[in-house]
Length: 185
Length: 425
Image (cartoon, rainbow over all chains, first blue to last red; front, side, top):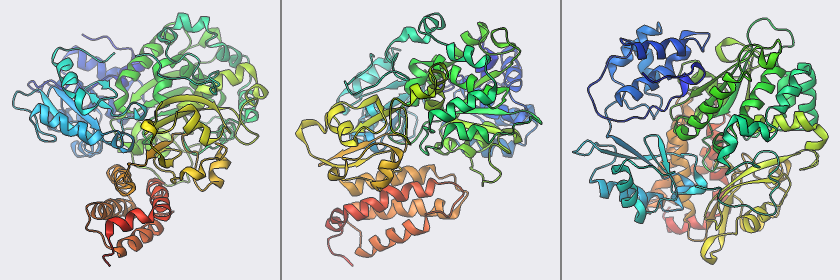
């Protein structure tokens, strides 16, 4: 079981996009621990909603309707309300995504540093269309709005890591690094 | 990777001294750098005294609006009737801005210390740091520092043996630009869609969870410990009378040396672009600079010789914003660049106000039409009309944010629009 300090329970990296059967969230000790610690940090139960959505995604790779119902029950909310919040935020995957969720920034600073070409190169090298999961379940490539790495354009986020100064030419290197399980830093 | 660039014009004293030094993330090392001295001093001070020092320093909010920080703190009720909260806004998402992430990444303890001092000044018992979801790697660094600080007694109950208790929680968002607007942030933190709310009530009256709240930017709070340690006059040795201190610049776009630089406020914008960042690469000419992040008015190269203060850039017809100049060189198609900016705001509109939800999309669509050669001259009038309709009519300023670059691009680069339209009426 992953040990998490209560002060940072609401800030765990959640984009662990590995396809697997959807597990229930709060049946085991880990899920209960996460829920109770998160609830202890906010004066209202509702405050724990974003942390719990993030936990669902950390655990299952995406947020299924069943998980939303579980969260609703745990926080005394309606499933419709939980869904209305989950769908507001772009980083919550409302359907399964590939093991590597590649978000390519094409916003203004990356745009003038060939961001669109980098995006096209990722689509080409993974053999996918924007947003779809590749046949082997590995890749999903989407265009992202500003990732906050404008001075290191083009910025690419893959799950919980950043790749910076990416050019269309270095896209195969990034993909190779990911396949080997390596990271940027 | 190491810290990219530095320049002799940099002050580098307050915020960025330890950028590039991974050791600074560790509490033990941080203490040898003088860490948490400000907190120790603040624990011996009356909360009102802390506020006075910050007020006298002239520190202004670094999130873009430039509101005086000390003054903001005085808006909080002096008599406590229930809980007070401090929210640190680390939802940095203005295109062009990437300064807060460097503070989280290199000096997390500086931010924690700033949060605690501010929390003490406003009588808060809980500080929340709201970090944008994309910043996972930097949030992990912050998380480690927070746990260290808790375990060493800098956060929690009876802090450093005093009678004062304060909790701190790190909270991550999930990709909503509008969560960076202070009322949107509070909506999001309390478990809702990040929809901004009409003011009044102001956050200091009724903020997150219905309690008095102060929202401060990361860079603002990170400046507080050194001000408390060294005093307000010390901070005023940099900058100007109305815009004192230093500012982290985020320079991006077509530049030889893009990156973060801590510079004195008041330095010429021209020097920032040409001296510090080396101008555009490959000997290209610069066509336009968006000085304060994508929501500020474009300047042409002959408009750059202005002091980079809140007032200076306002006089130049733009805004200092987050001090995040985006530089566009001669090869950039202004219409296309503007369309890309408009796409961002259309995508990030929360959808509450019709003017913004529809208007930002209209702007993006019309710009796209012009970009692909199907525009008409009347489209330019429609765009000007949209500038009027999108200004000052909505709950928050997201709609206004697209107007500043749009209107300036129409005024200053009309020729580029007309060339793509080719005379079609």
